[in-house]
Image 1 (tube, rainbow, N blue to C red):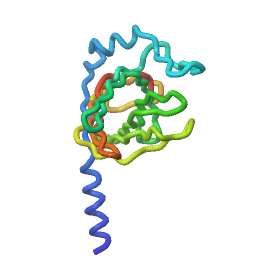
Image 2: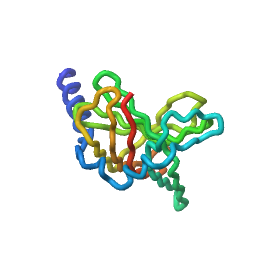
Image 3: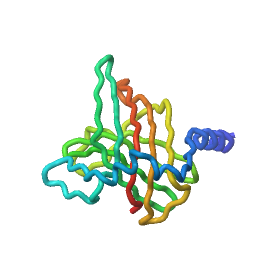
Length: 175
């Protein structure tokens, strides 16, 4: 009986993941092309910028009650750990950060919201309820040093009932 409940919960958990859309033509998107012509953002004075060109143009709109906040100063980093690709879209300035971590595996993905209340160098996540998620990538399989191009549209509610919407394009290489 306990094993059956465990298996059903595992199946249900697996079905909660969204599917990645593959579109090899995304590399020709106007926004993607413009990213390569813009310098990477420098989010704090002493930051060493790792990329010569901009890695993301993501717009986030968050809303508490009727007060809205818009941000567009995000960067993207992607790393591969075993069979999972981690796409970090963040605007950390050494004091706080805001963004999302997209975990991609087996053609599926899920989004984790970054908790802005962290210490320097700390990575912490907050509870969130996704309302809508869409991830488009230029390929279905990546190796280290591959170029990755993508689009994310994420809408959810984070702790405190804050509505958060993020959408935009990113490009970088897999580390």
